[in-house]
Amino acid sequence: MKNSLVVLLLSLILWACTDSFVDVDSFNEDTENFFNSEEDYQSALIAAYDMLQSTYLNVMLGEIASDNTLAGGESATDVPGIQEVDNMTHTPVNQQLRDIWSWMFAGVNRANYVLEFKDKTDFPNKNVVLAEATFLRAYYYFELVKWFGDVPLAVDQRLLFGDQNVVERTPASKVYAQIEQDLIYAASNLPEVQSEVGRATKGAAQALLGKVYLYQEKFEESAAVLQEVINSKNYDLLEDYSTMFENDNENNIESVFEVQYTDVEGAGFGCLQCSEGNVAVGFNGIRNYTGPVFESGFSFNVPTQEAYDAFEDGDLRRDVAILDIEAWAASNTGVSYNEGFEHTGYYNRKYIARKGDLNTGDANLTNPNNYRAIRYADVLLMAAEALNRGGIDDDTALLYLNEVRNRAGLPDATGTGNALTTAIYQERRVELVGEGHRFFDLVRTGRAATEIDGFQVGKNELFPIPSIEIELAGNRWQQNPGY
Image (cartoon, rainbow, N blue to C red; front, side, top):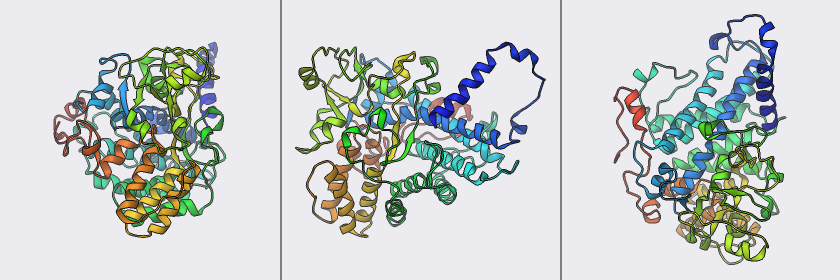
């Protein structure tokens, strides 16, 4: 899908750069009169998908806010907003948190643009287009409610200039209810396999719905829908975990939903959300690196010693997930690098730049590494957790847990009840390290205060609403507790 997105955007750019613009007939197309063909709906839908690429920041901060990684970077003042989240000292004046707010709402608005005009023009299989837009709205709103709690809820209509004067924050419970409704609709209307890679599928909608239920501790509902994904046999664990995050193995059998990235278009720091590449990959990279396999980066999001030590002896995943740069330099000739701020000796190997891409400028912002947003291993572990914590079926929960462990070269786990819960939590950490889930896993299971330095109960479960958003709303909104 990412290639088709780029071709469309580049074709529009190239057309605009020719002299032919002087010969075209005048037209007065506006947003109210746009949806006149299937092509129009598809163009607007592609724009809604495009904002997924900005979720690179959500992934980075989801690790940095947790006990898995440190902010890193060049110095203690390198991107202050990231440093603050790492130290749990963030305030309502934080550029990165404002970016997450505004970029996710941009995604919501783009999805709602399609849905606002869903009845304007008919064409075959329009229900699939509407289901994709509905899935995307749910995806963006799930990010918003995870980060900020109560947020303005708009359904099938855009939030337009002036609405800030009347719109209110909607209770998180109602936002979750809308997300559930959206994903149930999407799962009922999306195909199991899409003709174009990267588009949402029935399995993606079901897996995300199962996750949404799990976050609300609706264990029976979560287990039921996640087991539908498992029983569909459309997905499986990739046999060779070492290839999971390589650029030539994207959208594989384990991928339930991936955010598509490409390196064919340039990007700059003036509009990071505009990049078609995975910005986090450059930020995570090894500072001033020379040597084989990898390329240089900015040394943010560096794994802690604790995260490295969380892996059991013999776990095949450790050296795939976390790069020990000293061991790497010792075993490969010609390796050099600089130590950045909070250097731990480790890097998030899943998402650091590999050699072989086009190095389109700025090369650190245009890496083509897809983000594996929902993997089948995550589905198995979520299903195991729902079955266990819901008191539904520990035997099947153990079966799912051990599928993941066995792929990692580890023996079967044993136990039931709370012991099994602890084992599942541990497995989620090592299986999904570096993928942006850890902070929210700790918060939703009530473990954040004991695992994250500086975490304050009653405050840090949510992030602050950006102060500028409250001001734009006429100071009518109440800030999240503690900020």
